Image (cartoon, rainbow, N blue to C red; front, top):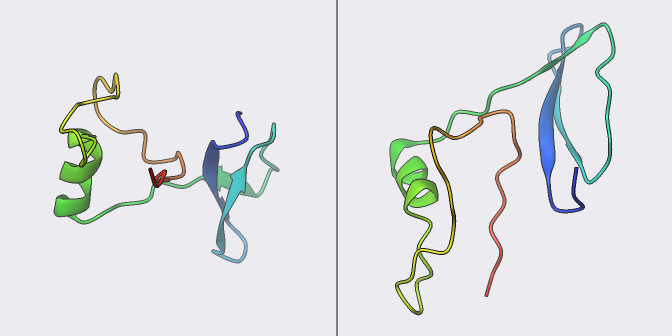
Length: 76
């Protein structure tokens, strides 16, 4: 993963969810990838992915969002 990328990991024994960012990670036998659900309005904003200052779409997002990937927003 890049330093700005991450995944959500859930411990099946404790139920605790954490994010792992910027490193290669192998799940333990008691861990699983966890899907983070977001409200519909937030999903719309992520899919729109438009630069608010210029109105230019700057991402090449195709298809549905991978819900196991950490959601991040870069402030211009």
